[in-house]
Structures are given as structure tokens and as C-alpha cells.
Length: 240
Image (tube, rainbow, N blue to C red):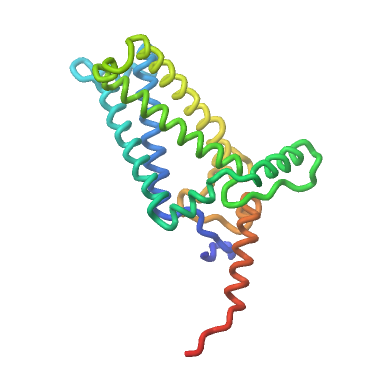
């Protein structure tokens, strides 16, 4: 914990390694979305500047494949981070769905409907953040599987009938639409356009959340951190 400039205590939310993972994910996802939709909709006006470079070089396809490898490489690293580092295992445990998430959803719904005076308190990750994370995991598996089969078509045709390639194409396209809309509608609102965090949730910039932000978004975790701090403060000091 550090002291913020406004004398409001700040709590570490994301380490530098976790922030690097997030920004590599953001860059690779953005480039995959742009180049992927450019491949699917080459007649679109915004795609035309890319076609200028494609007389002798398939720019869209190669950039798409390069960032697909970056995305998959990051995913493999992330799995290793979750499984083989103490911090990663802590994050994975916190991301696991729990029965409490159901009660948090119920309390939050009652608050939104005006049947509860105060909003629900969340732990390190709310049920909304967990849903978004595991949707990303599922989407990554689907997109990587179908994408590599479409990339290595000759290999795929040794295993699957030709008509399955059309099925993989449709799945890849609509999963891409689903993921892109989830980012623009759900994630961007949560970290940018939500009036409580606008113009930006700073935690992915400097890694910290203020005490007021923690109380609003992760009240249950904040209570536990305060209790742990009080317990450590009351422990007897060892003899020198």
C-alpha cells in the first residue's frame, strides 16, 4: 500500500507483470479485430487504405497471423503465470466462481431495482469481472482452435470434411463479433464510460486503486485487508 497524492491510501491492484499482460492483450486483440474484419469485409471504406499495400503482399492476412501468434503466446504465458507463481495462483483462486457470486448478483439486482438501500459489496473480483474473464478464456480457446484450422486448411481437411471448414469460418466470425462487442459495450463502459470511473480507471496504468475506489468496487476485499493490517499491527514484536 502507498499514499496517494491526495493523502488517500492506495492499494495495489495489478502488478507490473499483470499490467504488461493486459496491454499486450489489448494491442493484440485490437489488431486481430481490425485485420480480421478487414479480411471479411474488404469492400468497407475503412479497409481501402490497407489494400493499397496488397498488390504483391497479403498485408491483412500476415498481420492477422502475426498477432494471432502474439495472442496465443500471451495466453500460454498467462496460464503459466497463474499456475506457477504465488501471485498468479492467488489471482486464479480469486477468479474461481463461488456461491457468494450468486448472492452478490441477487443483492446487486435488488439495489438496481430500488429494493436495497446500498449496492452489493464485492471481493477481489465481482461476479461481472469473473464472467468477463472466463468468457475471454472460452473465446480464446474457440478463436485459437478455429483460427489455426482455417490457417492450416490442408492439415484440417485431413481430419474434417470440407463442409466443416465453413462451420469453422462461421464460428470464428461470430465469436469475433461477440468478443468485439463485449469489449466495446461491456468492458469500455466499466473502465471508461462509467460515470464513477470516467475518464479512465487508472489501475491498469499505475497498478493502484484509491481507498474510495476500493470501498466502492471491492468493499469485501478492503475489509479483509484492513482486518489483516490490524492483526499484524497487534502482533507482539520479537525480542531483539
